[in-house]
Length: 319
Length: 301
Image 1 (cartoon, rainbow over the protein chains, first blue to last red):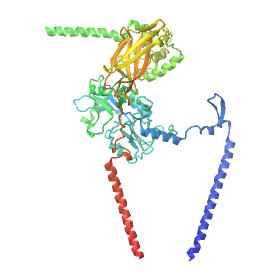
Image 2 (image 1 turned 90 degrees about the horizontal axis):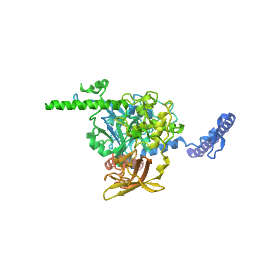
Image 3 (image 1 turned 180 degrees about the vertical axis):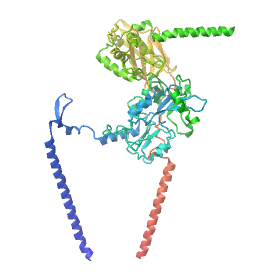
Image 4 (image 1 turned 120 degrees about the vertical axis):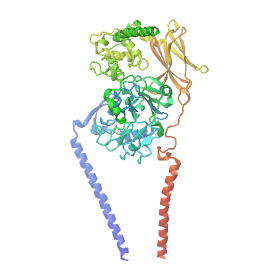
């Protein structure tokens, strides 16, 4: 019986406390808002106002705070970039052809790539490797970007859906989702993924940038990064950073659906299938069934000498 | 005896090649006389120089470096010259234009990459580094190029694209004979040349064999670009869209169900295994709870 009597009193006390809480919080908030308003009015100076030229060619003065309303909120930009970054370009299938007979280790591709993606000097989305298969076969240089496989082993292992394949064939990483588990690094047979062990190169400068999944900038510590086929450039009908930086005509890039690839140096456009057929094109590790979108032309009849200083490194594994 | 003769032949030809090629390389380029005296319609003023700079930065800097800075690619053979140097200074505008057009060895031809005005603007930028250079503007009338009419037609039977080049002069329609014509199909990053460039016949007509298996868009349309180059009329370009390619509508690479796809497009077997596993576990828990309730109810009774 006693419990029955207590119940109503308990309830009313709780209600009372709740009401007090609401009123109290409301008055504190209201008060601070008024105070902030007064403070703001006092602080307002000439430097807080800017002159702008309207579309009607009239010079107006506007408070700086009013300007922020014109620009889009950061979250909206991010949502837009994330959405179109995930979808990719419809009706396209990007392919890259790397002509090994022309590569002379100028390393301009690497520099352009590191510059675009804000990478540290020791981080490579694309790397020019020194290769030698056997003692009797010649050494050659081999640029190696991400192969953007049609059956990517790195994507299904991601536990958080951070790395994904798009409809145009590009494999990207969303470092907003990446938790840094590095399963994908372990899964990739081409070792084309890198991990941001330390703070990004331009941490301070990139602080206010909206994250672009097609450029992977700003880079973030504790996330994975990799070659993106310069997805942001392809959207603008421009060739990737590495392709257009090469001075030796090593790279061809194009759309498989158009059966055409364009050389980044000479800007000459040729038939994709014919180029592979005439020069014996191949892919790396086809036995894995990864179906790479990067094709290689063998280093046949190369016109340059393999640099003496690189010979040791190329033959290191041959014993 | 035969061998000695053969050796002699080889050595003579070798000698000839070296003797002939040394001056050719030393002088640089074997520019035809008619091309040497060619001048630009574009006036090399501050505007042209500025636009030329952006053309130069995009296409030339990677090898030649910034003029006067000496930061050209020294590893190339032959090394590309610093374009602010005397060697370049001493060349005529026509020679520079010819070099840009033809290319040689490592240097690509820019004829099909840059428009005529862009090529002249790049030269304007290079000339801005040459002290004492005075431009001679071309006497040909740039307005003349507007009179040119290019008619492109396609014959499905023979798979041939025919280009008819005419000029609407005041005296009547004139066929432009001996005019260089190049045919291109527009692709995403550049223009794919169809056959080699050729010259028009006496009627101002030339035809190209169009490849049968070139992909077009969904309807098979291909954007054709015709470029003509005539001594009197300059360079003219025309674009047209025609249904001469193979209709291409390839499904997207993420359309099929596969392991790497998003969850909605995961393979059936993985969805079935996963969800049946989950439902078995949850079902077991529900079953246990129901039994517990039964026990509880029995206890109450």
